[in-house]
Amino acid sequence: FFAATNALKLIPYFALGQFDTANLTASAVLMPLAPLSTIAGAWLVRRMRPEIFYPFTYATVAVVAVKLLWDGIVGLM
Image (cartoon, rainbow, N blue to C red; front, side, top):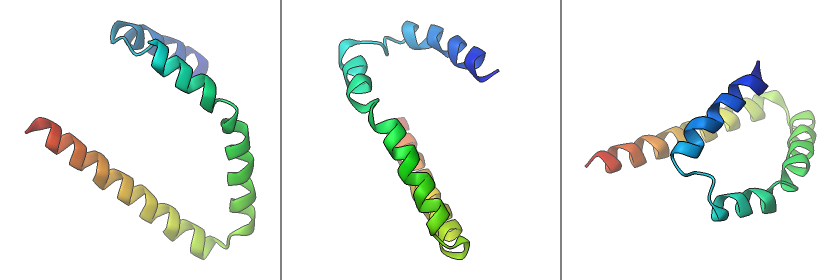
């Protein structure tokens, strides 16, 4: 299911010109960090107490949400 959904996303990405040299180069450079980040995240989750981890995670998501809302509102002005 996820593979099919992601494959369908390629069509609009191509249409919007998202697959240029700069984006593909950045993706290639950052790709090796994905498994390392996953391992580091799993290690952190296992070692952090839930009463610290969940509030930290919710606060981080809230900060990102406010930033995205701000960027969207500023973009509309």
